[in-house]
Length: 529
Ligand code: G4P
Image 1 (spheres, rainbow, N blue to C red):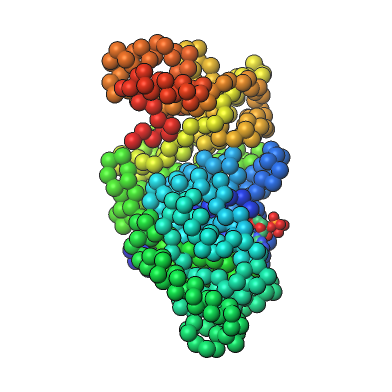
Image 2 (cartoon, protein in one colour):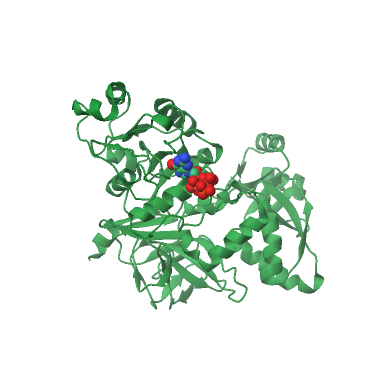
């Protein structure tokens, strides 16, 4: 197959949702349709049910053995589909944000009864900022939930999206009879007990056909016709370009658990979802069909098996092909590296692969060379934009609890930060180290991993910081900036890239600082444009 055809057939996406909306179930059903797995239950949920560290460790351990859950690839019809796993738990939101830099589109799963939830709002706002094309899947139609129109209103208002349904439910919960597929213009009837089989549906091509009454009853038939008329009047016509530009989000309804509406979603997805898209770098836009390789690290996964200390760096290929044993430039280190066993990921396994294409993810064994955001090229000094650090929400001093193991601690902390587990800030004034995280759970994870993987012990001490603000003065030499540095001395630190950060203790302080030092610009992410 030609290089261009290989690119065109790839669909790399993520599924995002609030925990429990049905992300794992949907992923699994997509794999079933793709023939990538044979039975339900094969995809491990990455859910942290009790919010306990032990859960996290167990998940990580299992993943360490089978990292393939991070990327699930399969072929469906003539397309190669790569699903990137995104943790739903809010403490791991940053991991999800980073993964979103590597997807070309997303599917947003919403629970029909719960509607739009907090985590969905956050993740969708990140996708919106980046104009990532989104499809909405409203799940659990086999249960009583909100009215379909109300729910679409809620999606528009809370998520700031502009939606149009491409399928529509006939009844709901106990009365759920099926869905009308506006994309394929047919009706699929829900048979209720298709949990074990992939699907049992009856196609029905025209809603005006009087046969409809016989199948779903007179009242529901009339109601459906009215609803479809309303949709026609109220919602915009689906135009693929609007969806690709991030200006229109098609909505599907179904029940992942019952395999219902999933095939429709997948078939439409492979038709409309984008193939790998161009990506902005610091210097220029990189197009997937450029022949030279470019790719970037969006995730680093530690091997939780203490016998194998190496890590796996996940690289998204942006352009060109990635070939085994070919030398590539590690741009940040200005070093040429070759990879003898790059991994490709499939539903239940990972395999050494000779060649990968744009849109694919390769896993590279790494002994500490990579950081998140690193770029590989064939010589061009280029780095990709858009892998920001967000301000953490929790801050603690980290102390060494075993003076004999200071080196191990330093190395451990350094490597965990490279993996993106948390962010390290070094106070300007006294060099003390502060760890900032998105969720409190990470502190336990760090402590556990430092001890088990690096043989180092740490303790924490509270540090009252509300937010980390990256500082970018209009003029580093002006008097205002000098005064800011002098007055705020105690609260200034450097992140691991040496960027100046102001650790503010409250929103009030931030407001005061902004008004007092207008030329000293403060940012909540490390991406300062
Ligand atoms: P998540 O990854 O988004 O967190 O959600 P997950 O797929 O694990 O689904 C959360 C719960 O919702 C699961 O039940 C799952 O079986 C259920 N579920 C998913 N899709 C549907 C659906 O279409 N209809 C109904 N009625 N339920 C659905 P659980 O009891 O938490 O877990 P389990 O013990 O069944 O695995």
